[in-house]
Length: 123
Image (cartoon, rainbow, N blue to C red; front, side):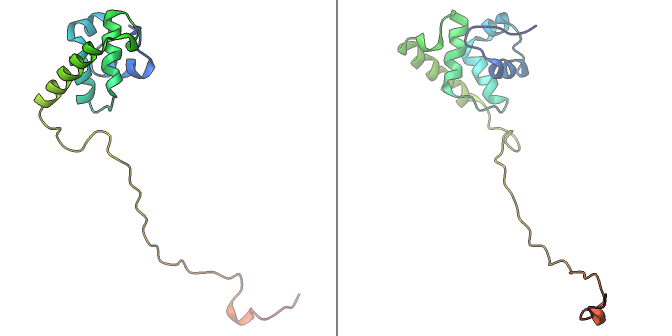
């Protein structure tokens, strides 16, 4: 089943599927805050707008139309829920990429002719 809800684009739909939210009913059962927490806990780095998008999907309105007082409630609830989670184990899912350069020894140079014939120009 493909998740098609208002405010939910392809990237968000992929994140939701990966955390087990496959339908509008799944989203409604969890709610915007718990779904946001699941996405964060899975190692993705969503912005706070995802929280508003999920709420907009549940209320069938554009995420920018969520009233300020409701936004503040959502942020407060999400911060409280995230604070209750244990710290992540092991390496973070999306660690920064680093590049290491190693000094390589100079490779030997090869010539086409032996050194004793280097000066010869016989044709």
